[in-house]
Structures are given as structure tokens and as C-alpha cells.
Amino acid sequence: MKRIINILKNNRAEGYIDTVISVFVSTMVIVFALNVFSFLTIKQDMDYFAKEMIEAATVNGTTTGKTTDRYYELAEETGLTPACYWEAAYYNTSNRLVQLGDTITVTLEYETYLKGFGIFQIPVTLKAKHSGLSQKYWK
Image 1 (tube, rainbow, N blue to C red):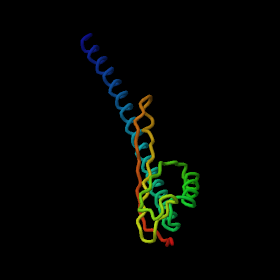
Image 2: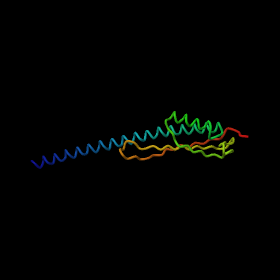
Image 3: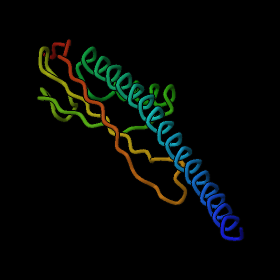
Image 4: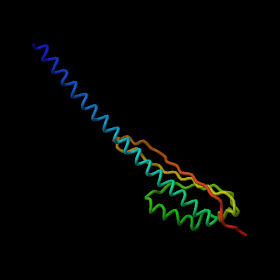
């Protein structure tokens, strides 16, 4: 009889351990899913940011001036301050002017972290890249 009681007690303890592990794993899966959702929303904001930046650059034919002002407006609107890299064949490199019909490309990079895993901080870099043609003729 004692043997049967001991077996039942051991099974009950194993059940508790299984339950604790199941709750822990479920919590980790939920935290990971929330992080993925967060990254998707940040990526969507980054794409919007890049499209707006390239639109400002192509309309003005430059990667400075009003384009820089637009960067700060978008940073305030989205709450993101990504690193911004420009690629273009400049007509005038000192003023960063791009001639009509030449390609302008913007690459945005934003570094964030996987949150909710305690002291572990896993960095994640999100990128958005868009390009367009300059719409301004420089004499």
C-alpha cells in the first residue's frame, strides 16, 4: 500500500513540474509572438518613412535641405530615428544635387532589441530601402 501511495505522490509531483514547464514555455511563445508583431509594425513604419523620404528627395532633386526637414518631421510622427544612407549620382556633390532622371536611393536602418527575455538583449536590425528618379533639372 505504501508503494502505491509513493507512486501516486511521485506522479503528482511530475504533473506539477509538467504544468510549470508548460506555463513557462507558453509564456515564452506569447512574448516571442508579441515581439514579432512589434517588429512587423516597426517595419511597416520604416517602409512608410523610406517612401516619404524618397518622395521628398526626388521632388526636391537633393538629399539635403527640405529632405532633412522631412526626416525630422517623420521621426517625430513615427517615433523612430533610423540611420539614413543615400546613394545617388550627384550633379553637384558639395550641395548634394541630383540631376533630372538620375536615381536616388535611400536605405534606413533601425536597431531594436528582442524584449521580454530578462537580462538577455538580442539586437535586431530592421532595414528599409527605396529608390526614385530625381524630378528636378539643375542648370
